[in-house]
Amino acid sequence: MASQLDEPDDEGLSEDEWRRIARFDDAFTEYAERESRRLTEAFAPLIEAYNARFRDAFAPLIEYNTAFGGISCRIAEAMSLTANFPSPVVAAAQDALQRFAEYSTFNSTIQTLAETVGQHFQSQWQGLFESLGNIAARIFPENWEGVDTPSIEDLELILIDEGIPLMWVPGPKAVEALINADNASARRRIIGSRWKGIVSDCETVLEEVDHPKLLSERDFALDCVDALRDGHTNPAQSLAANLLDTVLSHLDKDTRKLLTKNNFKQGGDKFSLDDYKFRAALTFAPVWCAHAKFWVDKGDSIPRTFGRHPSVHAVSRAQYSRINAVIGLMVVTSVLKFFDTQMSS
Figure 1 (cartoon, rainbow, N blue to C red):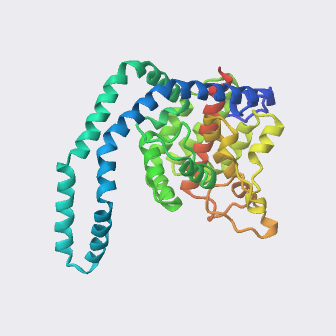
Figure 2 (cartoon, helix red, strand yellow; figure 1 turned 60 degrees about the vertical axis):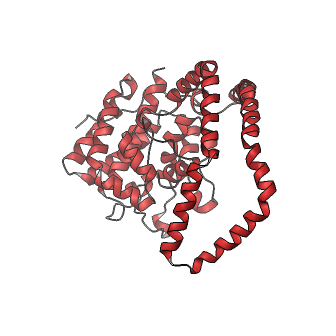
Figure 3 (tube, helix red, strand yellow; figure 1 turned 90 degrees about the horizontal axis):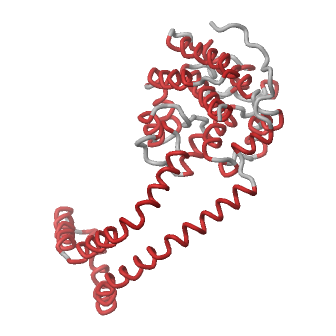
């Protein structure tokens, strides 16, 4: 096991440095607004061209609907009666309507239009789209490669409400499974069934951490990896929960307090993804979730989801589990990697 951890000999990231790398400021907001205007102006000719061509393409359909709108309404009324028809009859009618639609000129017109416009603007916009692709590659984490970008609502649910990291760990297949899962219980089952692979993902990322001021914490995180593989689940979770405190000491006191002040149950205030730059938001939202207020002396029920406070103050079968130990390791790994990328830059 690693040697006893010494107190950090530096203050880590100052408040000003934290704001530069993680928070939005006036300068960044002005830059974003300026770039937004630039893109709007750049796309204006394309949008205008598309609008004009679509108006021409849809003109026959609009004229048709204007002329035969009454017939369409009567057909709709008649179709509402099919609820009493035998299902084979309804299925046959639907099949006939579908084949009619496929053989009509409408679909082919739209397809030809899209191909024509796409070919026309391909050379003009190739450089711009390549630039946007490069920006996306810098923003999105490497472990999202090949994964459909989740909605903000999904991110809030997974990161803030459930405290499951998605930044740097786990790997793409696990990320995709977690995003596509139906609910929190399903996501915990995914972590439970894929824990070996997720632990290996954490090990791979941790081995990349090489900043001199993070090596001690990295070694302790790798001890968590070894403990989980050797079946020592409880020590792994305990170490991860306490190590999280130590890793966060690289932030100044005020920032650390902000990220760990989770009074949602009392006040209803949540971590806001909008307040942080993308990678910082993905990294520290689960940290906030892991610090949900918990008071043994106030009779709070011991949560079954991973939490720093119950891991330290309420050692129990309810809190301690392999799934929670893996989530704790994921949180520590994600934060260590974030500091490694920022303190090394």
